[in-house]
Length: 230
Ligand code: URA
Image (tube, rainbow, N blue to C red; front, side, top):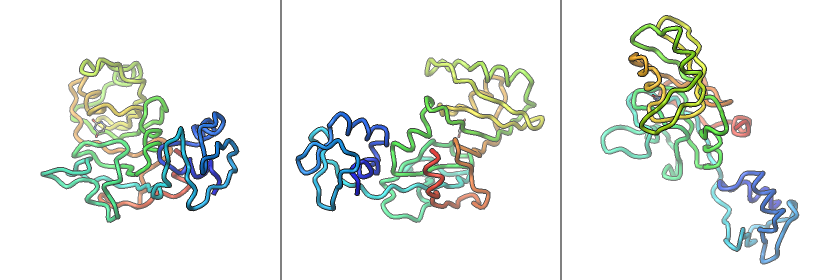
């Protein structure tokens, strides 16, 4: 396998980082500094980055789950079922959730063992929209969209939320697009208007849309195309 592919298959490096590592001659194969991305890595080659040996990891895994209500976005919980309990997979302790949802929030949940990939999806800097269908107790006023677009101050974190787009689809129903995932963010945004969120469903994260074939509690592996899109 080419050394650039070997390195970018590891969860810790993306392709751009691998190009840089090679250009800076920080990679060695069997003790020899390597800058050629085509350099061949064999099964028993010793590959090092900055003198640290890197192991060919287990293959990256990516799943899309339709999270049902009443389960926790955590890898373990003493009281309640977790989203990982819904997966019939090996070595579940290696998997993590890319973007948690509250206990009663439903919808798209992505689960992987690839940390680089999940960071790209969730970091506010990559500006990938997360789209939620929101149902509220009280009618949604015309002033909400302007306030959400301007950003809301969250005193606890001492930050202003990034501009969000609200598309009102009914008196108490709207689609909200946000690029970050602060703690209870959507509920707190509507809470600013003393309007309680009574149902919340994540439809989309960046390019990935919840598969309509998946009933709540069901999941499937992502396709290669879906993985590449992030
Ligand atoms: N915002 C919330 O308030 N809850 C969620 O589960 C997701 C986003």
